[in-house]
Length: 295
Image (cartoon, rainbow, N blue to C red):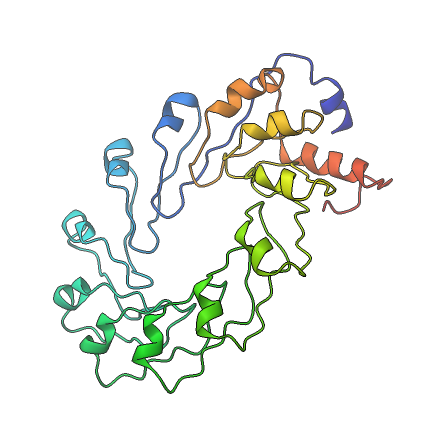
């Protein structure tokens, strides 16, 4: 692996893998970018299906066997009339009312609402069901739940990922609302005004998504942009951190940012692989033994 990296200057075709499509989402442009790649579209998840895949890969077997979270693509019925489509449970209070008409013999449950998102129509559909709204997550709160279930205890105790619903302050003045950390470079600047005594950290950017305003808010913070995931890359990071090494080594879920090819012309002829990435991580962490498990 060391020798492979040392001879990286030798012109070699860059190996960008697009080996699997997930959840029926496929970037058709990848076909043109990498004609020698094997692109599989073998399974659709959560009732989301990209009908164009049928034309791209007529010899593939596409399954639509289960719908999750009450989201159903009605076109699947026409595409695969011989498939068995189940709609057996609704999650997070999201319910597709059309499922009632599609499968009248199915048992549809709406037993719990999560994250303060509630579909009010479920009350009319299943009057004999017990619908709970017991906790709000990530500072997202559906104010209508207060009217629906006045006897419920609704907690708003913590905000995650720097997303905060300011209305919660008015709803629950006796609650302690924390904004202690921002994740993935997404920061709600209004939190600074709401909680001036809080310590807000912006220490790392994930997936190449970076909020440039964080630089102004916290000039003494160390912001790292070390890796791009899923082919999504924020081009502004190049200007913010010219001394950083930004890797684009793999595309996931068939989503590929073609601009990455233009950003790093010096990497165009390299064979960028995960093993090299892990090797460089080990070097950065002063791990002497190459046989140690990569982090």
